[in-house]
Image (cartoon, rainbow, N blue to C red):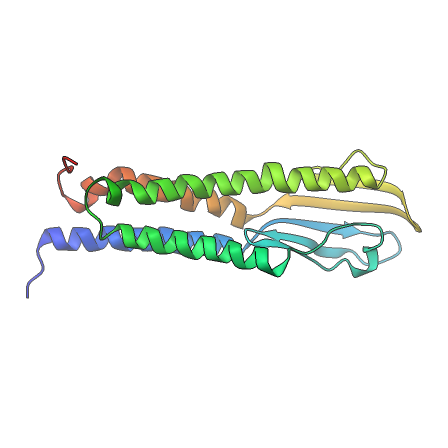
Amino acid sequence: MRWSIDSWRVWLFRGLVAVAAGLMVASFIMPWWTADINIPGQATLLDAIRIYGHGLQHNLSELREYIAADETPFYQTVLAWAYIAASAGLILFSTWLKGKKGRWLPGGIGLIYIAYAAIAAFVVIASRFREVGLSLGGTGFSLQGWNSFISVGEVAEIDMYSTLRFGYYLAYAAGGMCIVLALLRDKITGKPKAAV
């Protein structure tokens, strides 16, 4: 069986969609936000707090009585992984759909993933660490940059440096790639726009 140029274009599109789905999963595995914590007189805890697309992890056992940073419950982590698996699966499945469903499903999922990343950073992470900082008597942790807290329990001062990481920005890139592929599907595959 000989392949036509149109079938190669369809498989090229499917390959690009698979790359976008892979980037979504890769971004989910990488940290989205981390915090280094320095306690004077003790070692600096690098990546002491790590937030992924699927939840929060930390190594703050020494500071547990001062900083309430609970790790994400297992069931929420499972739900987050189910969401990303369903999203990646639907994006791949959309390459076999015809008409509007096949064109817009990856774009819609990409838009939802961008919203997921934005809400995670600017609502969940930012508000949680503002509350933690206020509970320590400070003005609240900021999403990025240096933060200092004086008189935290028996510890004289805690310095923290927090930053958004590559995995967070990769989430935007993966979502954006899904949207672009949805918009360019007919041009890449060489098929005329469906009437439906």
